[in-house]
Length: 232
Image (tube, rainbow, N blue to C red; front, side, top):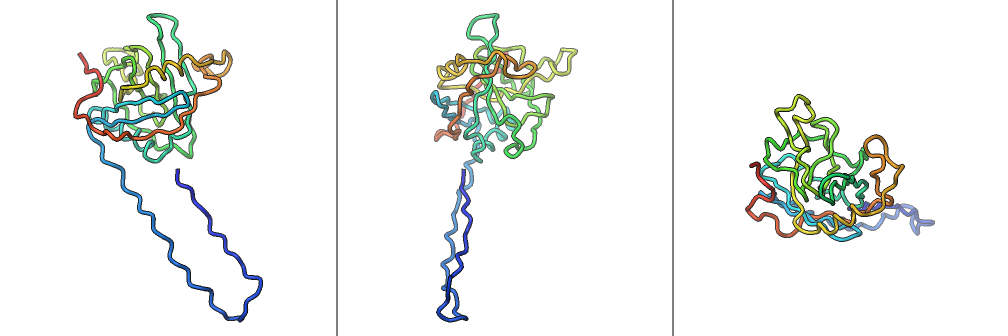
């Protein structure tokens, strides 16, 4: 994050000549910041956490709105210092079963506007183990928070045949972990408070949360192939 330094004017205690002109100041050097690199079909990003790195591939080709929003947070360094604050443990099915969640948790000064919802029925990106999925309330309210799945979660996919509008929309999947699932597992296995959290989050809050040191685009930007499982 860029640091801004205030210029402090120093008043002279005495002047040799009352009308002496102040010495000319050299113009401040202009810092040229290169524009962000354009996004290819696949964008690779590394989340460096205090437990190790997680490398992900984002499917810009099939989920352009969601990926461009995510990369905007990355390029402006707004994700730096956030935490993985939630680990949902599902008791049924093959273990590990559940997800971990991170993001800015509604900090208004860091959030961009909510984005349009991109359902799995539109993108074809399904909720599999290692998938990244946007957290939201109603469809169209997603901002910064997202989850990484420990297991396949087809119940998060859009179901156009459902009578429930929320199930019809599902959640927006947009990428996949390609390296660091061992770190994801370490975060998921971290201590959880039995009392912290409200509503459906109660009993799922990591104590302490796991800090994300930096989030950066990786050098390899576009593999030319889709990262995520297609719809059958």
